[in-house]
Picture 1 (cartoon, rainbow, N blue to C red):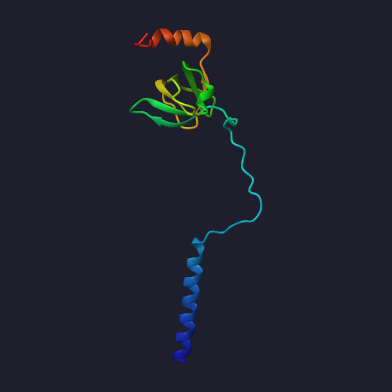
Picture 2: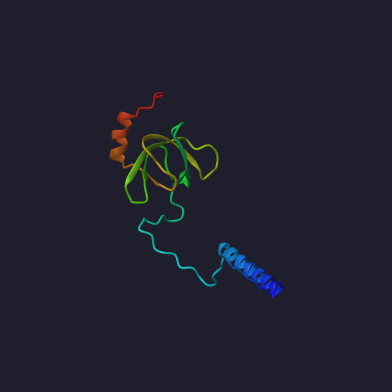
Length: 133
């Protein structure tokens, strides 16, 4: 009788431990996962975007930046607001990356980058003059 009770209790304890340990498993669902539409503006492929920021050196790296001219650039965040002003540095070699100096604001990774309007570039040129010129 005691042996039978010990066997049943050990089986019950084993079952309980196995059942409790299985909750941490990863379960894979088959089928296509639908993504929820985001409220943020989608960025088109090939659009210049920031891929790296260095706040201590005040530099950013822009993917697809070779399509942007030298001069003043504007960063636009996911909400469509201006997040920073940049000044593009000359391209070095055949690459799609461009480096730019941070003049104002706080650019973030994945912010899109556009050329400043001619009027804005004139205004910014008066404020941020090139010391070599």
